[in-house]
Image (cartoon, rainbow, N blue to C red; front, side, top):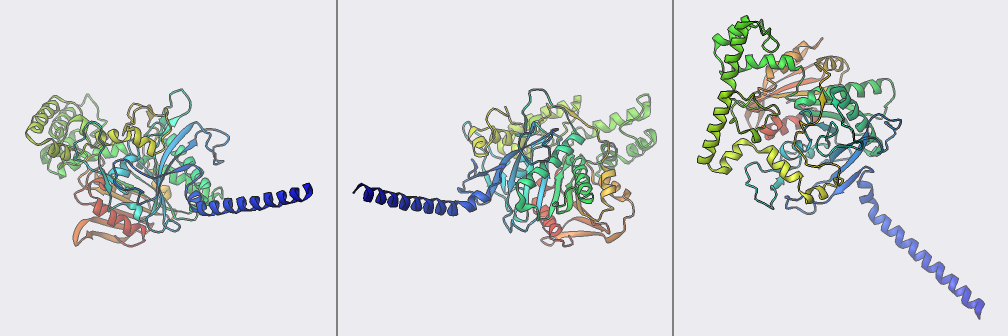
Amino acid sequence: MATTYSKNTKKLTKHFSTIQQFIICLVLTLLLPELLAVSSSGKLVTYLPGLPFQPLPFHLETGYIGVGDSESSTSGDNSDDYQLFYYFFKSEGNPKEDPLILWLAGGPRCSALSAVIFEIGPVYMTHGENITSGSLPTLTLNPNSWTKLANIIFLDQPVHSGFSYSKSSHDSIMSDSESAKNTYEFLIKWLIQNPEFQSNPLYVAGNSYSGMIVPNVVQDIIRDIEDGTRQFLNFKGYSLGNPVTYPEMESNSKVEFAHNMGLVSYELYQSMRVNCNGNFLNFDLSNANCSHDRHVYEDLISGINPSHVLEPLCTEGTLTTSHKPKETLKYRQRRRSLKKISKVLSDEQFHYSCWRLSELSEHWANDVAVRKALHVREGTVGKWIRCNWGIGYHVDVKSSIGYHRNISTKGYRSLIYSGDHDMEVPHISTESWIRSLVNLSIVDEWRPWFVNGQIAGYTRAYSNGLTYASVKGAGHDATGYNPDECYAMFERWISHKPL
């Protein structure tokens, strides 16, 4: 009897074991697509406070990848000192085949979140909203999101930008070259951890100061492809909007731009050209005539918003420009006048015209629920700041034109575009350095390009794969000021169509 009972028990145990194995296999089968959908370094974001859509109508992951000098710097692990935070949006089209874009913000030291919620991401934060205590800015879906066409990684770089942080206690002073090095290391590790995207066409893109970083990263990519180190990189090209490229040349071009826009007189412009010998930035201070002309010039433009010369110059806390204007006496007087005007206008109307980008984004990103939703590691970042000017940064790249010149001989595609009302990085400077690239022949002569039957700007294409486009009426950055036109421009370019 005992033997029979023992046999029955074993059969029953085996039967239950089989059922358990079946249940486990069934559960794994059901969960496997979702488990595979999330990368090893990323966590799936299921909701965003301020957006009235749950679940999210797009696929978003956030995460960290460690970079920095270590023996494991290319092994794909997550143990390095600098923990770079990223937002990864899968394409809303065909993520398995659509391009993969690594997007870098400007600054330097600005968070890529700005591009997500104010420029090309799938959500858009309303500018003119009055935020009360306990409330959050409203997010809406962006009809011009570039994620409709591509998979995009938005990266907070360098370290201490956005939600990126350092595991060590000592202060980290970043530089252009170090930022580019860490960015490239991030890209390699991300692709190792996400091999399903290695076959997608790869592009690197950004705007503003990333014009000093992106070409450096691209050159590293091309080097490793050519020497066989990174054969899995399916690199196709890069894109830059309103790119800082040669700051000295761009500063000098502001005078010509101001004259072309009717901000300074013909006589003053000609006088500055003669007295300053064409160098309006680093002139000899003992040159009294040049110094005088420079002061007159600065006084004339002190009330102009350099990010967009047609936009109001707003109070210090609401400036959209990454470089605050010099606090001259007349500027302080104008600022007081603007404060008086703001009392007459409704707060919403005034603030809307002033684009409270920093105020709104910082209010949202510092909310506890937002950080939890984004899987931000607790205790790693104190107050999130849109552009963290407080961290040390060493500018060690004088010009990125040399990178462009080297890349231009390799046959890769590039899109360079400029808002034609941007006085931070005037389009005339960008057009000038493009003309300086060697062995360029024009394949599509200067012509207008259109959106909805209207001229959206002007474009020219070259034999080396470079396409240049101005964006009519746009400022710094073009994607934020003219989203409809920039979406159409990007859609045509990424699809290998003429603008």
